[in-house]
Structures are given as structure tokens and as C-alpha cells.
Image (tube, rainbow over all chains, first blue to last red; front, side):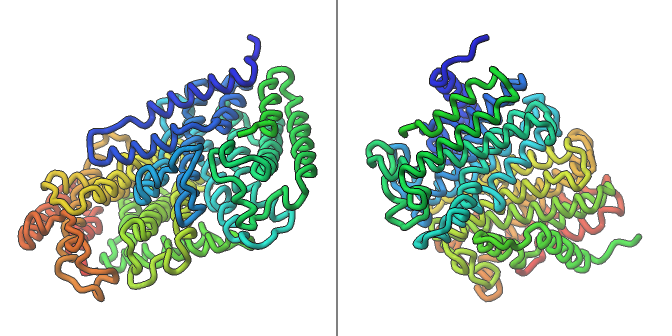
Amino acid sequence: MTALPLKEALNQACHEIERTIDVLLPLVPGDENILIEAMRYAALGGGKRLRGFLILETAALFDAPREAALKAAASVEFLHAYSLVHDDLPAMDDDDLRRGQPSTHKKFNEAIAILAGDALQTSAFEAILDPSTKLDASIRAELALSLAKASGSTGMVAGQVIDIRGEGRALPLEEVSRLHALKTGALIRYSAEAGAILAGISKSDPRRQALLSYGADIGTAFQVADDVLDSTASTEELGKTAGKDEDASKSNYVALLGIEGARAEARRLIERARNSLEIFGPRAETLRSLADYFVERRS
Amino acid sequence: MTALPLKEALNQACHEIERTIDVLLPLVPGDENILIEAMRYAALGGGKRLRGFLILETAALFDAPREAALKAAASVEFLHAYSLVHDDLPAMDDDDLRRGQPSTHKKFNEAIAILAGDALQTSAFEAILDPSTKLDASIRAELALSLAKASGSTGMVAGQVIDIRGEGRALPLEEVSRLHALKTGALIRYSAEAGAILAGISKSDPRRQALLSYGADIGTAFQVADDVLDSTASTEELGKTAGKDEDASKSNYVALLGIEGARAEARRLIERARNSLEIFGPRAETLRSLADYFVERRS
């Protein structure tokens, strides 16, 4: 079986993940249907599904069951969607646009957006704990625990708080790195490791370690590239308000390294990420292309 | 071993659950410590720990391991605390007081309160998935899945949405019952069932069914008693703004049944809940007293 070109593989994964999300969030007859509509609006409103794709691709390295991998992919997209819904709230980033569309609290209202984010987080755990995937309970529990560690007060949310606390002052490079390793990095590392967890590969296995290193490097590269993108692209291209990071005097890699320095750092990280995949040989070709894509992307 | 009188048993459980929460939420040196402080403020700021106590008492019926039961009790209190933090936000109930103290967004700020609630939800899953409890992974996964079903878009959050949607119009009794069965009932049912899950008792076992019935009835009685309390007590006694439900024309049991009718309904439910416990004989004496306490409580 030859690997699909990256764009085709991404498109196909997107389609499958969205079909899985659609099935996991059925509309209901009761008054609470507005909640489901808001959850679907947030979870199905586009996005490249890079985290879900990482899970599908790393799971495929070990021939982990596809249905379980799809549930895990939908789960991480629920988690990501919840974080965006809450990030956009007036008390947080106060963003009216998300991917060129009204953010969830503008489309619905603040109360529904808070609750839809809350329920999306719950759904993320529900989707991977679902016993119908036929995965061993030990694997489901390990996945759910890893997701919790990556997304709560020791992961993504901690990073968001450091980001908020750092507004208006220039953080040193190591603090900016730590911020992003938590805020966006933790969930990307989880996604890269999840395929190995799904296949029951033990924590000490060098293949699982290789995926963690790969995930860490593309996660950082992703953020560096995001900062470059934010400092160079227009609002129209981004589908969100451009230059917000600079406006709020947020610390970012471009401010610390300059545009060219940031671009070079992203390339260095991607090269190292590609090298981490050597252990998998030609099977990891799509993940290698994905590493390049992480810094090449334009939206 | 003789059972402790209820008040002593409640006090002791409170103390043990809070010590467990304290250990699960250690302060950290980084900028994100403010998040942990807010989580601790919300999770350790009092409360009767009725949900956690239910888990401890139902677990004790089956001699389930105490340490695991305490983690599960802390977990459900995290979940409950997150729901209160988000409920109090300006976009939701807009309540400045919680148990006589500033609510989390008043003590910190809205962004930190949103994120602390988010991270408390995550911590709820993390605490029960923690393998250090030595529970079988199948039990940890089942507990976490049950918690997710009780708290997300098919449980507590669905009930909150129905509540918001019903404001300003009088809902019929069956809709009010459904609202509360989801909003507060689902987590109480989960707590009553959790002891059986912790002990590996199967879903079809009549003892687990008995606990579910018990949980359903005390959950409804709790809400009926809460409506009675809210319509008769002063703000000072409640530690929160009294009469809010009537002000907002929310549907409640007192409006539907009258004060005396509501009191009688609560007594009927408690009697039925006590009867559900027959299968356990004298071991369930504390749970019987707890049922009475649910409608007798004054704050």
C-alpha cells in the first residue's frame, strides 16, 4: 500500500473525523438541543484537524484499530474546540471571529458558549472511554489520563494562564518556550503519542519515545510558525484578527528571535522532528511530510 | 463496628475528602500558580461534600478500597466545584457570593474563573483515572465514563441549559422534574452508584439498581427541599442571594406544588429512598439517616 500524498491524506482524515464527530453529537428533541447545536457549531466549524490527523497517522504506524483511532481523533478535536470556544470569550481573548465565522458566543450567547465548551471537554473524555471501541479498558484509561494531564492544570490550561499573566511584559525565551510547550505543545505531544497508546505500546518503548520527541518538536515549530504567520499575514488571510499578539505586547518568538531567526528555528525543529522518525523507516513518510506542512502552512 | 451518628460521619468524611483534595492540588512555583490557587479556592471553600460522602458511604457497603473511594469522592467534588464556578459567572447566574464568600470570579477575575472551572473538570477525570489507586483499569474507565455521562451534554450541563431556556416561563411539572433530574440529579445518582462501581459490582446486580433508585429519589428530594428552603430562608441564612429563583420566574417545585405540597413530596421521596436500601440491612443505616438529612437541612 502506497501512502497518499499529504494533502489527500489530510482531506480524507478530515472527512472521516468530521463524520465521527457528527455521529458522536446527535441532535436531541429536548430544550437542551441548543447546547448540542453550539457544540456542533464549535466542533464542526472547520479547522485542519491536525491533532486528530496526528492520532490517525501514529495509530496507523502500529496498525491500531481504525475505529478506536477515529474516536480518539474526534476526542482530541472536541478538546481543542472547547479550548477555542472559551479562549474567544469576552473575558478571555474577546474574539468575535473564528475561522472567518462568528465565534460561538457571538453565534449563540455567552452562557451557551461557556456550557458548550464545558460539555465538549466532557465529550472528549466520553469519546475515548467508550467501551464500544473494543479497546482494552487499560488502554482507554491510559488515553483518558494522558489527555487529562495534557489539557488541565499541568498542561494546556496552565499555558493559557501563563499567557494571560505574561501579557504586557516581555517574557524571556525560556518562559515563552515553557508557555507554548504547555499551551499548544501538550496537546500536540499527546496526539503524537496517542497512536502508540492505542496500540498498547509501553511508555519505555523507543518508538513511543520517538513519537513524543517528534510531537514536542513539531509542536514548538507550529507555534514559531504561527507567530511568523501572525506577524506577516492579514486579517483576511487568517480568518481571525491579525497582529493581536503584538497589540497586547504578548511575548512571542518573532519578538525574541526576529522573523528570519524564527523561520530558521522552525526549520531546525522540523529537521529534528523528521530525524526522530527514522526508527519507523518508510512507513512514517506521511508524518515526515506533515512536519514540513506544520511550518509551510499559510492559514 | 457501630456506625457513627450522621453528623460525625459527615464531618469525618468532609475532613478526609478535603485532605485528599489538598494533596491532589499542590501549589506550583510557576506563573500558573494563580490557577491552582483559584482551583483550591473553589474546591476547598466549604460545602457539605454530600456527593463525596455518598461515594464513601456506598463504597463502604461493599468494602471497596478506601483510598480509591476518597479519590472518587474528591473527583466528584471537583466536578461539582467546576459547575458552581461557571454557574456564578456574570454571563450565567451572575452571583457575587458563594457560601457567604466572594465567588471565584470576584475573588480572582473572570478569565481565571473560567480556566479554573475548566481545569477542575479535567482534574475530576484525572483523579479517578489515576492508576496509583490500584483499582482495575476497567473500574477506573467505567467510573470516568459514568461521570462523563452524568455531567456533560446528557447530564448536568444539559440540565443547566434547560434551566436557562426555561427562565421567564412556567414549565410544567414533568419538565421541571426532567430539568432537575439532569441538572442536579445526574451527579447525585452517579455518586450513589459509584460505590458499587468501585467494588466492581455489575450493572444488573440488584444492589447497584437499589443504589441508583436511592440516588434518584434523594436527588429529587434534595431539589424539592432546596426550592422550599429558597422560598422561606433569608439571604444571610443561605450564604447566597435568596429568592433568586422566584425573581427570575424560574419554574420550581414550590411554585408548582405549594410549600406544603413540596414538603410532602420531599417526605414521600425520602421514604421511598429509605425503602430502596432494604437489601443492605443494617449496614445502610448511615445512608438512611442521610436521606432524612437531605430534606431536614437548613443551609
